Image (tube, rainbow, N blue to C red; front, side, top):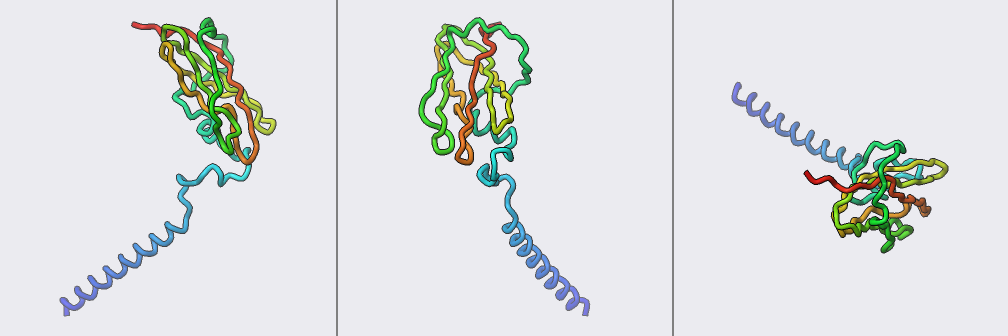
Length: 165
């Protein structure tokens, strides 16, 4: 009797575990994966988060910084050029921007990207370090979303040579 009860309990437990596992797989496949949610699932540009905008406009090696318009040394702009290249963004509404350093030394700089998205005006500051006589990609000139185009006007607001120790 004990053996048959043990056998019945074991078989019943296995069936329960298998059926629970199958139910979990079915339920998880019906729910959307938040990480795989695309930006295009958002219906309007005002639903984009700050991180969404940065990912779409600043596909670069710049660093997000806290800057509120404080005065900065900006003596090296004659060595720095922002140039426009190939199309970028949704439906190629913008141009790829490159930063060119013509100096013979490495420069650290801050670029301010001013924008106006549906009346929401602001800026995103980014810090870059560019080696001597080098070129860096600094993102797309426009946020291209939902068939509309929003320019991010880049301005160099601070620049100085990298101090070597």
